[in-house]
Image (cartoon, rainbow, N blue to C red; front, side):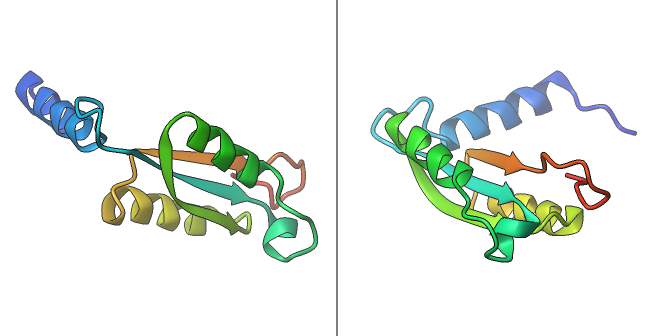
Length: 107
């Protein structure tokens, strides 16, 4: 595994901080919320944690670009995290759920 040089780490960190508006007060900080729940994704239970997280983020000055409810599928969660980070370039991704003790609760 190749180790990054100090310069590469510093450059990537500066790019991320600039993109997320940490140095630009007039730019909105962006966020997304993912709730991981089989029952909520199937419509069997109302997701309350996602909307609560969205409201907290909005109150903290974030522009929430997406709020998702997905089943407890690790590959689906991985796909959404990558999409939000790489394609949407969201600064902060908050996840909620995966609190059960069944074999399906892997996230």
